[in-house]
Length: 197
Image (cartoon, rainbow, N blue to C red; front, side, top):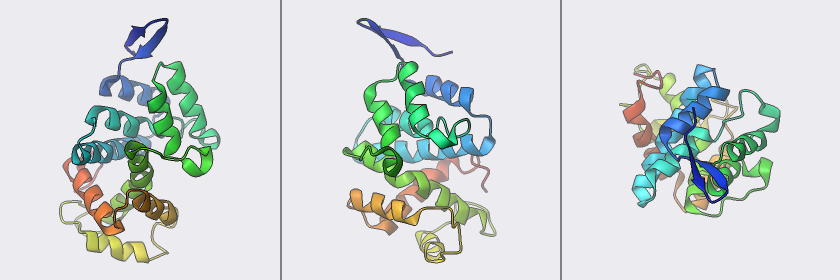
């Protein structure tokens, strides 16, 4: 059940991880979708700490960015943005969700949080895919060098849009290998939750 707070005439949802997870679970049953949301949440929280930003807020946007993917992939993420507005989420949360799919929505990432979600969304999946093909199936011994090697193998994880990831790194003015290193570090603490190791 979402907890609402009143701001003037408008009911706004409380910006808590619990409320966000409840909304995610309301629209997503597939374990792989939940795991992806948790991975992006972890990456967003990590980068919020790195940049001295609001870890809770960034994590919520990571958790909710693919809210509508399971039920409405053809309308993603616009339907999810509607659901967030209906649930009382503020515009900056809705905009963060729309910015992660810039090519689809036309909402260009224009602040640090939006640039990070754009950069890490597909990259979390790529890093996990690399970990899954290693003998250890773990993030604990995964190196940036191993990820970069798979990055160059165009036959590996063909569904991952490498151009978007590179564009995200460029938006952050961060070398790709550095971005990858940060994402590995962000995901390590939740490796078991993601079914790794």
